[in-house]
Length: 414
Ligand code: UDP
Image 1 (cartoon, rainbow, N blue to C red):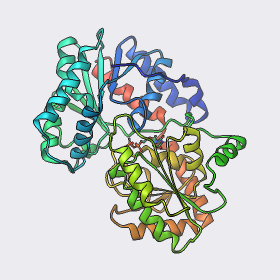
Image 2: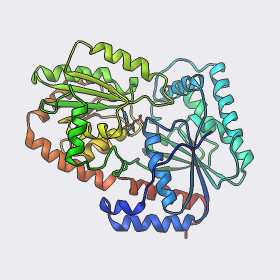
Image 3: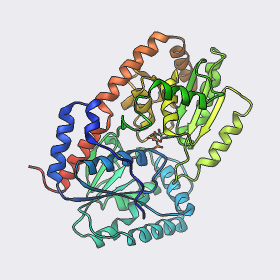
């Protein structure tokens, strides 16, 4: 396992975007946690929502004086093929789980667990990838409280994958889910619900000055910000349904001929399906100069695209939470998104965007066209969007809820 590089973060800086009471509460919770040693373990330092969250949470906890640590598993493609199959199985599709897959999973988990040094008071394993190390963690640190932070929608899994994961998940002390319904399938640990959040101060989400926006726009040429633009930002993953987004665009273009589509996707380090899907999407759209399939963009370019698009689409078939939705809403861009997983927590239908059923491309296209043809509605939705995210989905709120769980597991509450 290895510690990923961490950016500097200061809790003071959040005074610009959140109420002082929230920051004060964070300081109090941190003081209660005191010198407890906390470790987060996940399987990638880049790409995807979990890495995005930890990159903010860990340095902020340190700025609050906590002994907060993050280790990323070392693993090869064979392991990530297995864990992607587990992820897909938990979301409801996939091939059978073979003995060989289980052996690969156990072997890599044991090897990583064996590298753990020292002891921690709380060990948080994120998603199913490191869940296989809990037995070794228990042996090495019998006093540690083990928390499983599950970011995945478990409401409609393939049974054998759920059974496989539940076998470990039911032996942790606490489990944290992004929505209450996701935890119904797991018995045993005390359960908590914490909605994820975005960090408003990262390069991805902060306000940008005009010069930076202009420079990033120029770099995105031939994409034009003078013609209507719809964007989806997602890993290239079958669950994000980029082909469905292309279909929405094609239908919307019948009403808006100069419409452009940007499909932006990073390759997460633990997602072996990404490259293949990227190539298939690029191939599908190669003849249309108004479709831009972009990958590995710097965070500021993603920021500009979310900010300057007229509408953002999130056509997911399944979505644990979908940070990208709040990222766009925070930038005052209305979102047309599927009514799945965490998306309906973020989109208030008819207020800051529209919810559509995941198989209803036709209504999604109509909603996109309605928004593109109505500047005033986009402005109103954009203002509502900003406030909805400010109230519910900014980092200080999530961090306070997480620290409150740590206080509870450590038995340090009053
Ligand atoms: N992301 C990015 N560049 C991309 C695609 C995605 O930076 O090209 C980021 C995106 O901005 C978000 C995260 O990856 O912060 C994806 O998190 P989300 O919860 O939406 O989905 P996940 O990938 O975890 O399923």
